[in-house]
Length: 320
Image (cartoon, rainbow, N blue to C red; front, side):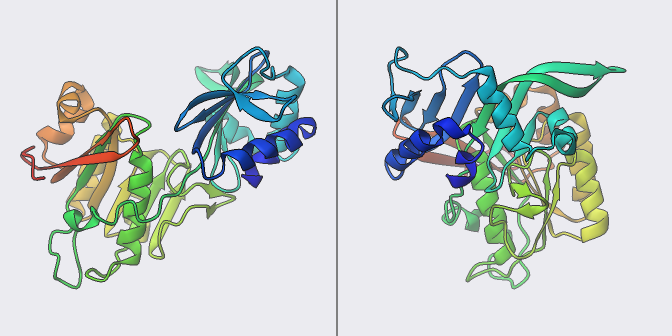
C-alpha cells in the first residue's frame, strides 16, 4: 500500500498507515472514497467503513469519522500529479490517473468544455482510489476451455467473451487469462498477445511500464480507444490474440469484425449480468447475431465472495 499512502496529506499518513497494517490479511481493500467536507470512506470486501483520525482505525460510526477538507484534496492532487498538473492534462481529461503499482485514481469536479469536448477539469473535489489487486492463477482452472486444439503445439483459442456486471472480478480474470496465454502452460505453447488497455486497468501501466504481470509475449497499447487500438496493434504487432476490456460501442463491433477477419483470436469482456442481458442491449446483441464469439463465460459472485462460472458455446448452449 506504500504507493497509495504517499498520495495522502502528510498530517494523516501515520494514522492511515496503521489502518493499512490492521487491514492486511484480514480484509481486501477495494476503494477509498475522498469527497470534500464528507467522511473519508473505505470500501472493503467485508463492507463500508469510515476513517477515524483520532484513533487511527476504521469505524462504522460517522460521528468520529475524519471529514476531508479542500486543503487535503489540493495536497493529494499535487502528490498524485507529482507537482505538475500540466503533465497529466490528458489523464485528467480522461478522468483518472494511474499510480505506481497499478492503482487508479478517478477524478471528478468542474468540467471545462471547449467546442463540445471536455478540455480539462477544475476544482477537483472528489477522488476515487481504486486499489489494484493482482490475482495470479485465478484463471488456471478455466484456461483449458479457451483452447481449440488442446494437444497441438501452436494452440489457437476460441474467440471468448467474459460477461459480468462491475465488481465481480471480470478484469482480474481477463488479466490472468492474458498472462497464461502469453507465458504458455505445460500443455500449450505461449501465444503473442496484444492488449488494448484504454483505461489502464488491465496492465496498469505507469510511465509506460505494466505494473501487473501480463506475460512475456504480451504487447500493451495504453490509453488508446479500443476500436482504433485493436486495428493498430493488428497492423503493427502481428498478434495471435487481441485482448480488450469492456466492449460496448458500435466501433468496437467493427474492430472485432476486423480482427476476426484478419485471423486473430479475440478475448474480450462486456458489462452484463448474463447472456439474456447481452441480447437486450442493441450494440452487444450484434456480437451474438454476427457469431463473432465462440465461447461465452458468465461470471457470478456469491455472498461469500466465491466466484462461479457458466460456459456457453457459439449457439449460446451451456457447456458446463
